[in-house]
Image 1: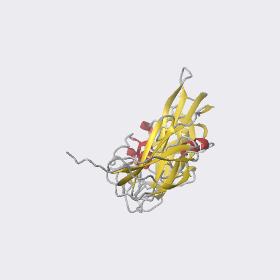
Image 2: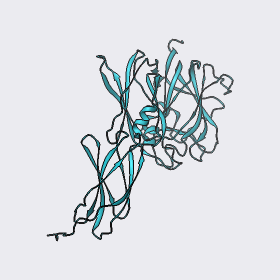
Image 3: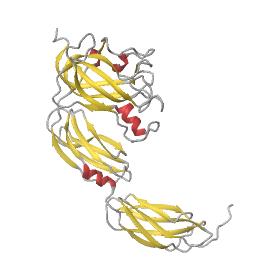
Length: 378
């Protein structure tokens, strides 16, 4: 049997000071001199009857409390606690946290229609962990959840797709990790028409000036085989030829393109996404009559692209959100309005994330509006 600790309650903290932050507060204090003091505890309520506790060791003279759903006045009780779990008399202090991050994010929202759905732009200055809950009206005009987007990005955008080009009501609200919710922003918009291009029609086109030699068994057809979950099922060019380099392929249809996705290689830190041969800056060209000698005269620049790591961390450092974005969801790029319909694509890599000279890509997927397909053109 453990001996009974017969210590007594310590004296309370004194000289309490408060510094307020968005959705949080830092409380500093003087710690009483008591050899039995183990920690200081703060008790407070963040929403109605939801009570939270935060503890801080006797080795430091402050604690940080967070999770507040709104700005305003909140009472906090501070206790000193002995090794025998005896509590001092409480010291009550009032904190006044600023507008919490999830509310600031909600206030920054910008929504507009895009291909197949809606696009959401946001600012998240404090880089808080937040969730966007997206709603859409169903066939009975009831709002139902259709997507959830998790992020800690300082700013960015995301799109919700899969909707017909008919007017609909969409809603979005923001949630933080303490299950605090914003209001719901409702918008009525009409998604733009698009369809996913059939990859079974894609085929390689070998033009004279193209750098299309694949490395080992990683040939170009792996770009459209639908498998982007394995590190070895990729397209990879041979090393030793420098940059820029480019390759060409036939979409099998003539289409006005709306967007495309690039799935990065799912591999390690040095040979996966945001490193090695992962494209960082690249260009997409389109043509309906490419020069068989490989000249650029009949090609139109459709989009210049730059791969952006969500976390903003340096090369060699990567978060789970980075990997989700690049390898699972795929990096998405929309084409500008007004580009001509094209059948042939030329992918030109300008710069890589790593200090090498060979390119690897797991998958390419294209969407658009078909103008003419292969059967109609014959």
